[in-house]
Image 1 (cartoon, one colour):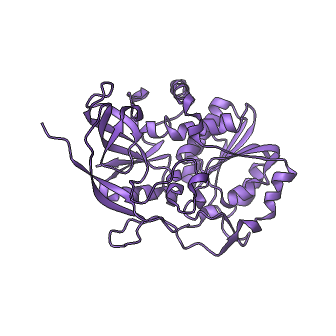
Image 2 (image 1 turned 45 degrees about the horizontal axis):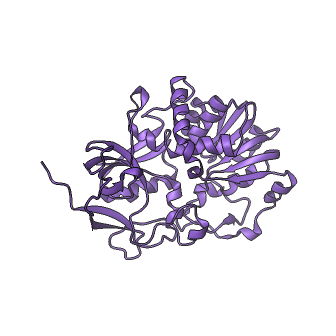
Image 3 (image 1 turned 60 degrees about the vertical axis):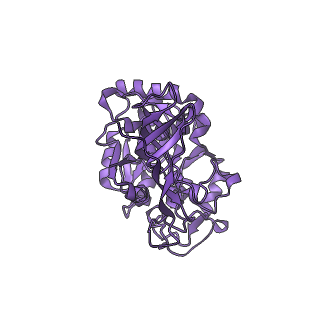
Length: 381
């Protein structure tokens, strides 16, 4: 019988990033550094887990940004020298916990570690999903992204049957679930998605969106104004930037903006807007140190005045505020899947990337180039 490992490779946060995060072993200023770390001996009610899958989430980026102060962040930022934070799925290879014997598949905060010791209370055993779906969906549709979509739209946004709803980032992990929940569970009269390619838009429409607009189209602004003629009840925002700016003018009086994410700004955390209204939407621009000159939010465009004139509500939220209800919501999702109200498949709902441990940051960075459809998952090979 092979003995358990005594050390693990880990990707630690070596420096706070300035712009896009980096992982160059030859660069002393690199964000991430690959190191070997000792594995502590197991104590009672602990397990040693081998990482199999990592969840890739835009919210990991603010957690390593020096400009985000701990007292204003929803979770403790990653300290320099500590492994990068990440939820994941792994296999128990050594156990001192009766409820989690060796071989159990668990979900928990694995971080970017090949092996990690977890307290049994922090490791959730996972059972097979219906329809033969991969257990990776516990990181997406049946995990944080699906729950984010549901609580953001239904609880925070108070979405109701018959409303008109616009969803940005509609081909992403959270957005694609929000589209389906809005149309097939809430019963929205019209769902308008926004995505980055015509191909993605076609997929979003198969999920239930009445129409989907390509934000890279030269006529996007006019298309969005036309599609939202008569205005909409809710805007579910995953990207921020100038699409949010434009949507401030397209939500009806007393309407709601659910502020789920700001992925267009995560690699440049100082709140900013583009100088020229004629510039491309900020969600299209690279935020990797090559963006055009911008100025501070104190010069924000006149569109923000719509919050006052239209009495709009902008509601931020974090999914962890609702985790006490997660089990019942996942049951709702599973029933909706059986009833045909949710379309979840290994082929379309997620992108699982085979990744050598040395390339874990490279796969994570795919989040910010807009290339993935559905949930982006790292599979360690």
